[in-house]
Every structure is written in C-alpha cells, then in structure tokens.
Amino acid sequence: METNEIRVFFEAFVREQPVDAVLSGIIGEADLLKVRVRPVLSGNRVLFQAEEFRGKQAFHKNMEPDEAVIYLSELTGTVFRQVQAETEGWTGQILCSKKGKVSVKRKKKSTKAGENAAGEVLENAWKQGLSHNRKKHYILEEGKAVPFLVDLGVQTKDGKTVNSRYDKFRQINRFLEFIEDVLPKLDKSRESVIIDFGCGKSYLTFAMYYYLRELKGYPVRIIGLDLKEDVIKKCNELARRYGYEKLSFYTGDIASYEGVDHVDMVVTLHACDTATDYALEKAVRWGASVILSVPCCQHELNGQMESGLLDPLFRYGIIKERMAALCTDALRAEILEACGYRTQILEFIDMEHTPKNLLIRAVKQGGAKENRREIEAVMDELHVYPALYRLLMENKN
Image (cartoon, rainbow, N blue to C red; front, side, top):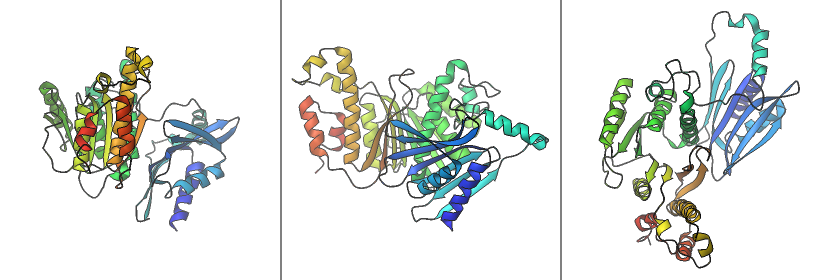
C-alpha cells in the first residue's frame, strides 16, 4: 500500500505542472548523495531531467514521464528517506522512517481570485519556464522578503536580492542545501541542540534557524558563539526583534566552551587554522550526529611539511600553501572517519567567489574506519603532526 502511495504521488507530480522534486537523506552507504528532478522542454515535448549528485560531480539524464515515475519511486525508501516536491498547484513531502514507515503529504497552494480564468495562459507560462537555463529554484525564494536578510543587507524590503550581495544569497542557499540533506539525522520529536562556533555576523546562523524552525517546524535550539562582543550584542538584538526565542549568542572561544552537555549538530564556518580542529574535537566528544565545517587559514601544516620527493613542488610558496590546506582537510576527514563518522568533502560555493570553498560534512554512523595506519603513514611522509590527530587520536588505543 505504501509503495502504491509513493507511485501515485509521483504520477501526480509529473502530470500536474511540476516544478521540481528533491530526494535527500541517503540510506546506508549509497554513493548517490542527492537527486533533483525537474521538467525540461525538448522540442515541443516535456521530459524530466534528473540531476544526480555523486561526490563532487553532478550527472544528468532525461526521461519520459513514465520513466521518471519509476525512477523516483524506486529511489524513495531504498536510497533516500526524504522527498520534497512542488508543482504549480501544490507542495508535497514523503518521509521514510528507519522502521520502514512511510508518510506521504500534499498541500494545495493558495490561488488568487481570477487566476484560473485563463488556464491556457497559465499552461503556456509554465511551459515557457521549462528550459535548461531556467531560473534557479532556491530554498529561500527570490522575491520573498526574509526579515534577517533585509536587516543584514542581502535583500531589499520588497524581497529583491541586492546585486552586490547576490553571492551571499547564493552561499546561504547552498548552505541550506547541506542542511536539507541531513534533516533525517535530526529528531523532530525532541529539541535538537545546534552550536555554531565562530558565527560572526551570523548570516548562516539566522538562515539555519529560519529554515529549520520557521519553514520545517523542527524544535531546534541554536547557539552562536564568537569572540567579538559587539557582533554578539547585535546578533542577540536581531534575534529578539524577530522573536527567535530559541536562538541565542554568547561571547567565547571554541576550545573552552562548556555551556551544554549534549549537542546534536556542530557548525563551524571559517574558524581560523587550528580553531577548526578544536571545534571538531568538541563535536566528536559531544557525540554530535552531524558536523558541518568550512575550514579557513590552514597554516599549521604549511609550517611543518617536508618531503624529499615533493621538495621541488614545495619550493613554490603558493603551491605549498594550497597543498598544505588540502592535506590538512583530507587528514581531518580521515580522522573523523576513524572516530565513527561518514565524512565527505564537498564544494561549498564556486571558487570564483572565495578560495575558502570546501565544506567537511561528517555524519555519525557508529563503526569507526580502521585507517590509523594510513593516516600515520601520510603524517610520516610529510613530517606533519596535525592538531586534530593530537586531540583525538594520540592517546587512542
């Protein structure tokens, strides 16, 4: 019966002026991270394009409507736990629990008076939006004013994105896509605690709260932490103004913070050099289910790296600096794997916007990877001794 419900859901999706469907929340060890399906025009025919995200790459394929229904139905509940779908007339969701229970919901969109008087016009307008170059569908919609984005200068009061801040708007939406992928790791039946270390002006902290609590209805409590007192004061003022009762900011550093005993998700964005390592250690010690980290200024290994084999490359300062940053983050990912986390290194936003474009996403899975020898072999070859290894593995049996 549940399988039939899923199929009926997707049959309605492909038939009723679809916008897109996003499948996320991977089950097990699948290499398919996320799938987005949307309609495209091929001549005068409407086909469905699947965009499959595997590692750092995206693959595309076009399907007939019937093929799309089969494709989406087979992935739901076997590879992915969650589906978010939208048509011109309704939004829908499918959630699959670990015990196999399936929840299928659809909600009709509100219709303005007189809008249905010209159905053919609506149909043509919908088809005109189908192309490979259609306007990107963001989690936070363009044209819809969000209070914190207005106050932070990303949007105007009527919801338009400020041209000079469009990169920030894209970055916020990209970050929320990473949050969307890990929603199944947050328990909607209890309050989840999320800590954002080095939150700064808190663009992403506010976005995370708005998305999880206001849009998705998750009972989360989010704590932002930063060393700048004036920034923390401003963020608390904004949180009070918006009525965000479960969002609070404190002055403090990553290494010494002891404000909570249990944390479900740790976010650390652009924490400088080894501050990232202390944040990752905290997250592991707390047993956080999810870790999202965008490292910054990886100087530690740059000052340590030596290798007879690679010395000709290390003579070029900028090359050594970039190699040190990549090696730092790769070793961090492997150490998190050794601590029982399924870890990925993903592109945050395009390199043209910022060189700090890698995000480490770690999801707790229990069994630790037996990779200590490999980690130490790399350390020996490069003559490095990374902070995260000292913090988490040095005294580990």
